[in-house]
Every structure is written in structure tokens, then in C-alpha cells.
Length: 91
Image (tube, rainbow, N blue to C red; front, side):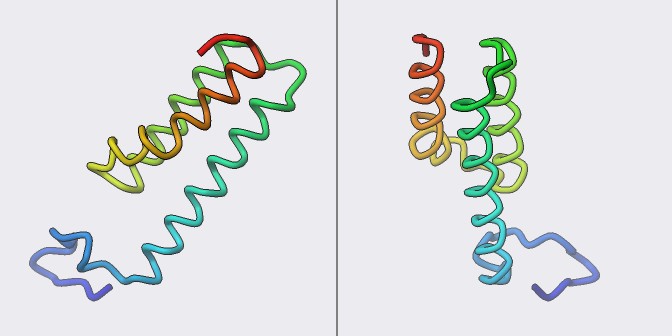
């Protein structure tokens, strides 16, 4: 990404470096995978902590990809909720 001294933040996400976008996407996938792993495997996990982890995951994803709430809600949220339901029997 080329930084402009007048506007250091690109207005259009397409202006970003494609490699940087792929790195962010991979980082998001790893983060969601780790949260899913904890939701499924941590023996000391409580429902409140699980919900907090899901909310923190969503916030981190939206910090990486601002304005993509719908994409997160359609792609990742159902997976997280399914893991929560499998673990605790609730959404």
C-alpha cells in the first residue's frame, strides 16, 4: 500500500495491497478457528465466558474489516453459535 502524506488511510478497501488483505483474512480465519477450538475443548469454559469470547472475536474482526458486519454475521457467527449450542445446549 502506498501511503499518501495528505491521506494516509485509503478510502476504498480496493486501494489496499492485495497481499495485506489476504494476510488479514488469514489472521481472521486463524482467530475464529482458535475461538472455535476453545469453545469446543476448554473444560473450564462457562457460558458467560463463551459469549464474551464470541463478542470479542466479532469486535476484532470488525476492527480488521470495518463495515463488514453482515459478512461476519453470515459467515462466522453461525459457526460460533453452533459450537456454543453443541457445548452448552443453547444459542
